[in-house]
Image (cartoon, rainbow, N blue to C red; front, side, top):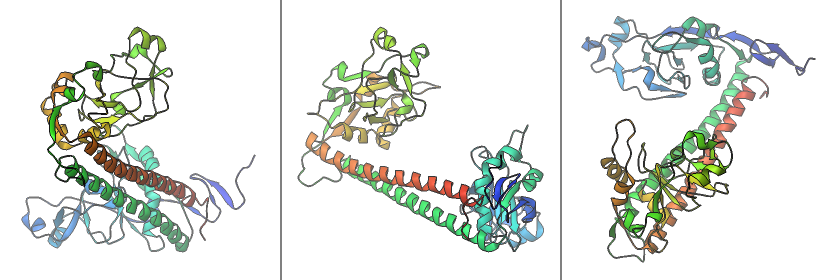
Length: 425
């Protein structure tokens, strides 16, 4: 049964429009390799003005400022070459190739090292289109063109040039696709920049509010230094560890198990592979049930001391592992969100690290954790500070969700536009 839509054809790269072509990367333009000019020759490097790019300078479609520069003398008298603007550079030898294919387009002439190959497109191909196409094709290129049996991962150049891709027949259509995808990239970049700014503002607010450098209106007086165990009233039931749960007790349904990996810096991290324990294990091990609002502190690196307030995760009954301390200071003494923010600062992590032991797995004991001292204001001021920081966290979370949606939309656009499933002209 033929399920190919009218106006489309089946090809080795899948179903594409009838007027589209299938080309190998080697047909798209001139390919060049790079080299490293001799480091022992000062005339190649001193007062250099031409960016010289190594594999570490390239990350996806973003080309970092090359920290090293070479001279025009190096270009003329060594095996390196000068690439014109709008060349597409592809890292072919790097330790990060299994994660993604680093690809970039240069805005200015530059030189590359031997771990990079460059495509200089011929006139009837749009560089921005080819950039998006290579980024989208990255997983397939890595799967098909990676050289095996070497200590350093690399892409076989002849296989790279023979890799085939779908191609619109006109520059106008390539330009339209590239513009749409570039607009999506611009939105993603703006959200990333805004998110970075919000994180920076939150860090600044934490530095001022959690140390008492800046006081909120209506509050005054000295902050008090207290140990964590003292904040728990000296009661073990309010400052206790989770349970020693071994692999034979773990299952895929039953009573939810919160592990150390679920505890991030100031936030609960939900995992796809949720863990549970048997009901009979809960009884036989005499497990401690934890609840929404409990402050969980991970005693195991990295970093040891990270914590979160347990949110509503939609589970009827929950337990946690032995490397997690369950901290339940009374509401009359401490605001747990305030404490979770204290436990997210560099100063806190340094204090925990100084008291951690172990060689392969660094951890802090519950006793040492309980003896750590922090400065706290009245619970009313703690609550006011926590409210401000929580509002900032909510704003950051909303931006992160918006960014995730924008990235997902971009992926869908690439799938539709780069295969011709949706035509723009």
